[in-house]
Image (cartoon, rainbow, N blue to C red; front, side, top):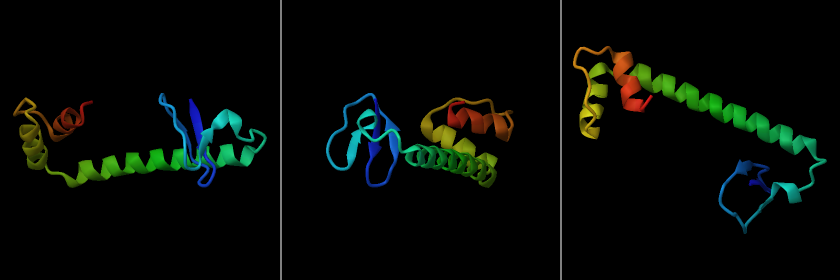
Length: 94
């Protein structure tokens, strides 16, 4: 079910019931207010872009040795001949 925060205009989709605070069911909110929906969609796009950029930065900042250390700490088996990109994907669960 979709919910909207009447203060921040954030929209979330949750399988759980949410109540209290400024959260109301999206269908109970004024749907004629297209600006709220458009603003929320833009916010979501920006957040997704930021997450992608953060992942790219992290991959570029980590050395192969850092990734191997993380895999070992997580107990994940890996091919010692694998390239950094392959190890990174393994570490990220891709």
